[in-house]
Image (cartoon, rainbow, N blue to C red; front, side, top):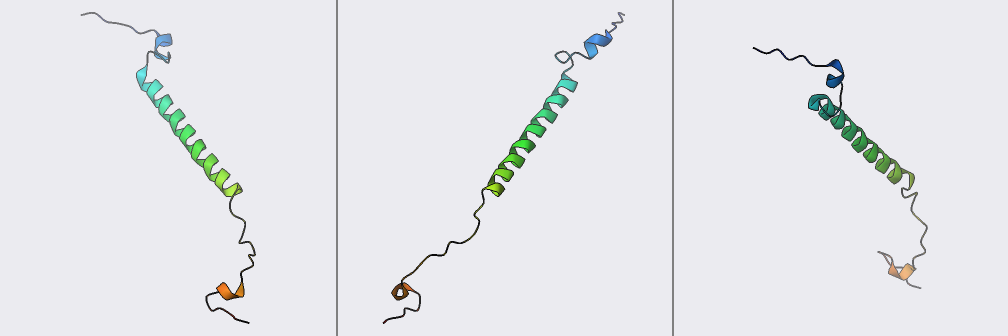
Length: 68
């Protein structure tokens, strides 16, 4: 029976330990997605429609028209 020892430096290597690397990449993707969504929401909020403009409408084209 052969006993293999692992070097502590190999356990910390990003490329060799797929469990910690996949966990790290998951958190990076989650942070990037949340940052993208929050940035989009802020962009929409900062450029939102500020109010209704006052538009002049002829009195003859109203729902209840007024004739002269």
